[in-house]
Amino acid sequence: MQPVFIILDAQLKASQPALEKGLRIAQGLGAPVTVFVNGYSAALVRSIGSDESRLAGARYAVRHAWQARIDALLRDVPGLPVDDITLHSDIVWEQDAEAAMRTSILAADPQLVVIHSDGRDRGIKGLVLTPRHWQLLRKAPCDVLCVDEVAWPNELPVLAAVDPDHDGGELLGLNAMIVRKARQYSDALDSDLRLSYVVEHPDESLVLIAGEAIPSYISNPDSLRDYYSGKLGELCRNAGLDEQARVLLEGRPADALAEYQQRQGPLLLVLGTVHRGPVRRMLLGSTAEKIAGSARGDLLVVKDSDFDSPWE
Image (cartoon, rainbow, N blue to C red):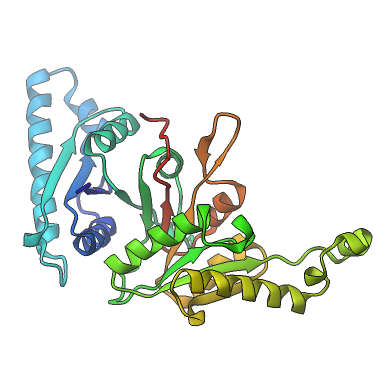
């Protein structure tokens, strides 16, 4: 089985929330784990200079320090039988951090990459997606989970963002992929799955200008809510979920989902990728990118089986 690939923060004494959350998912999936960290330190290299023997000794010491730290973290993971998980440590020393990460991910061929991205220590409520995170979200050949510092409860709700307007409201294409992957991870976490859609109300002046060209179901806010509530309920039924799994929000998608995620507490938000562009390059899509950039908790971006990574 493909492993869960966990990227550690580069600080040796960091708390490493990606490790704890990645291990929990790996246990639920019954998957092995690869723990990756790049121990390269530019400051250490500068202090040693050109002495190759001292540099080799430093690399050896750093590698063993990281292995000891990983072992200590594994002993402290609450409620997880880590002895039952097959774990491989991938501790590298590479100046080009992005190339090292890409090479290790391609070699491991994982089903999921887990990485920490948190802005609380910088006074920001929500995830901080650096260029490295965006590289993973857009180009990694597998699903990517960005996590924050907040510990998961025993039951972590999973909220999948779907679009009832796709494929005539049927559970096909992008919606089917999102629901299938979201169910996989909600099953791994033994948690509830919910489907969400954000209703955006059209500008009233545009509705007046368009007149009869506007479908009747968006002629007023109440009918628009009713229409999408029914469509989302149909998607829930097609997914084998009851209507209580329906989460209909209103407003701008990024803001509404971020507010809901913050209000509900720990919540795993699931987004899907889409193809766009003349060469079918896989990107998130403009709306999904805004949602990802506004996330207020753990974010899972799932990719379809036909995704062609530009890394490969």
